[in-house]
Amino acid sequence: MDVILDFILVFLSIIMLWKGADWLVDSAAEIAHSLKVSDLIIGLTVVAFGTSAPEFAVTISAALTKQTDISIGNVIGSNIFNLGFILGGTAIIRPISTNEKMFNRDGLFLLIVTALIFFLFFGLNGWTSDDNYTRTEGLLLFSLLIGYITFLFIKKDPPEEISPDKATIMSYVFFFIGLILIVFGGHLMVTHASNIARFYGISDWVIAVTIVAAGTSAPEFATSIAAAIKGRHGIAIGNLIGSDLFNLLGVLGLAGIINPSVITQDIFDSVFILVLMVGLTLLLIRTKWKISRAEGALLVSINLIRWYFDFAG
Image (cartoon, rainbow, N blue to C red; front, side, top):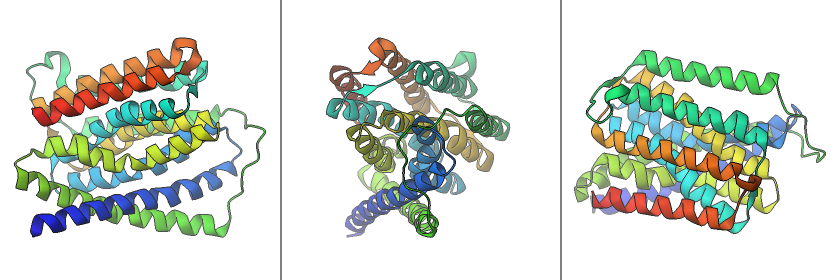
């Protein structure tokens, strides 16, 4: 009976994460629009922060309880899920237009950050390394996030002609309600997903990079699909690139500051796949400045294959 309750509470936590992030993103976007910045900037910052809140809640909760595989695995798994299932699935529904700024500034920065994390975790001897992820490295990552956000708002893109809704008092109310739902939902997710993993003999790492990663990426999926359908491509892809950057620099950075960890071989495999996924995504962004349905299907297929090997392993 205990495991049935665990499944129910994991399902409940996903609903809390989804709805909480939905309210958080909508209200945060209204607040950000008051700053008169472009869709891409909003997608890369405020919307990305909002949709990354579930990963933040799950990863920080896991770091505080010293569950390293859940803490790091959720971030890496969510980023792969974002570029595979979500970006790919969104492109299948509606091809996504890209541009040079998206590639040269934001996409290349994501690739550099991902490669940096691979180097920090494994160094030059990555195939055999079993090293520590230190507070200094966590602080370095978090500092890069602050610098990136500062740069975006100093060199902000001009706003689009469309005039979105302005922020009201209810925008702030729903922002905080959403945040509370996300934090509590993240705590439920970590606790009961870990219980399920132990019951079935599945490692915490596999659960983290699959089920938990998918659950916490649900807000990114809903946001990107809705934005693409409405033709707001800057929010659709900016949300995913920005979320990946927030996850790697902000969430993983804070996790390292809170709880320095030992990096294992399991983590190596998924970080290596993430580096390849980011490189492939950049290539697809650059080709004809559009991610087509066929390219979206390729991204989804790669993610399905990765999941198969995660569970089979």
